[in-house]
Length: 191
Length: 191
DNA sequence: TGTAAACTGCAAACACCGTTCGCAGTTTTG
DNA sequence: CAAAACTGCGAACGGTGTTTGCAGTTTACA
Image (cartoon, rainbow over the protein chains, first blue to last red):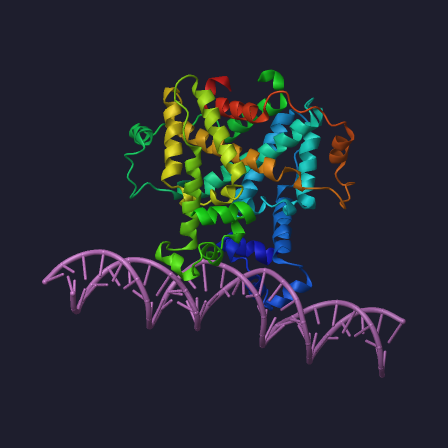
């Protein structure tokens, strides 16, 4: 698992082939199947292994919104450290013990909230998704360029680029976005 | 492109192999390379082809928040029709003319908003992400089960399941989540 | 109309992938 | 000390994306 994670960190998920992992372990590809049933198995184990980096969880004291934001920030950091994780967490099979523990900790933080269980589940899913979104934007953010593209069919786009680049947002965007989302999901009275 | 989209709709992205597409076209795999430079090219074209289903865009009259929500709903519907699209939109190369047109239309809708260009860009990215999140939850929502998992290490989870299943949320969750998110991103005074 | 150039289709091959099989070599068990 | 279990792994199978080379067809031009 450590070898696979190292390869993925360095060259992406596609580079995690059984032969590559075996080579890094100085063994043969077929030998891995004594310990893994398939490559998907390995990917699941990788996902759960980096999910362990989410620990330690914050104490459930104080404002639960603040605690949830700390959880989300930890999730974002893990996804920035391991950009391939987003690609994995789409598959339902990647939910291992560590992922469940994280989920459980989130529920514990929200225990004081009066929201529905369903609402809490959806709030966690959204928090997860937003953390991934921000991580991806941070890692591959400036990868796109408009060089060589005729922009005349997109008037609003060129108008937007004519404006001077504004100052970075005052408060952290991640906090603002998640606060707004979680409040909308968990406190229907504030709709 | 139509053949590739049909295969992906039926059997997923992994089933879109050059040989499979060629077979559906009753031709050889190598023939495709007269029109495509690579499989990635085909995937990019597929993404942009289904992005055309986002048209027609709503008129930019009336409340821009409502218009944006209509855009987001269209995006969600496309992602529900083509579940493989989420897997594609992670790659930066998938931004084609139709995707740019959609982006431009969003900017046009937000022209009346006083927010920063940066804020608008991020709002569109978030809207995109949330639409994908909801689409994925709708398509593969109930795929996961706790059967055969020892839940004793997860006390809050079992406590949550002990509660009776609550009634579905009153207002549409998609609207609520997106409204809260967009308001937080575009109207800093309401933080 | 005739010929040259350009375009198109595609079988075969290459390198790589995940996975299985079978057999040695080693370790543990009784 | 023999039998059983475990471990490593070369070789092979069927799949993948892609390249090559060569026929067959269509177009362009004199």
